Length: 117
Length: 113
Image 1 (tube, rainbow over the protein chains, first blue to last red):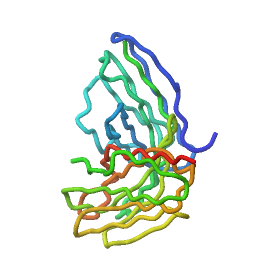
Image 2: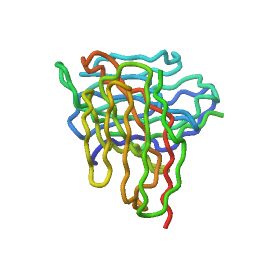
Image 3: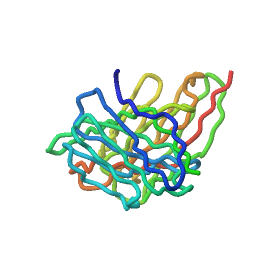
């Protein structure tokens, strides 16, 4: 596997289900991100992890719970979602340093198309 | 606050040129450009830092006007493979590198034979 992989690629779930999205990066990066992409809306940053520590949580509802067990893996745990949460969820990674880092090229995975019934 | 992209959509014939603009009302540290084809992940094109730096990538180049807080993406002699949605992502701040990008709504570019 190369780059950033995401599983599953498609997921249909009911509002009472619990599911998890998985992201794995094979690039040796130390930062990982979760984005939400809805139709006709811009990419929305949900969570950022630098060096396995969550550094950003952009007012995301608690029904979304991220987990970063190591620098290569990122999960998004889902429970009691709403139909409006249906979207494409994209994972990305980049290499950042502790100092001023001008370049933050992000590599995206193919995404998980989530449908909440 | 998300940056504003214009135009929202553009149709080109092969070989024609196009300009996509990205504007922000906030001071920017950097501007990132990505292209996303239908059903695929966004792909990185280039990053521009404040200072009016201009970068190029084959026949795609971009500029960053720090005073206007605006970046422009220039596509010259467009090819069919250029079709897709172009997003700009802006990074605010004083240059500490927040690693947090705010994306515009995208510009859908269609290149036809």
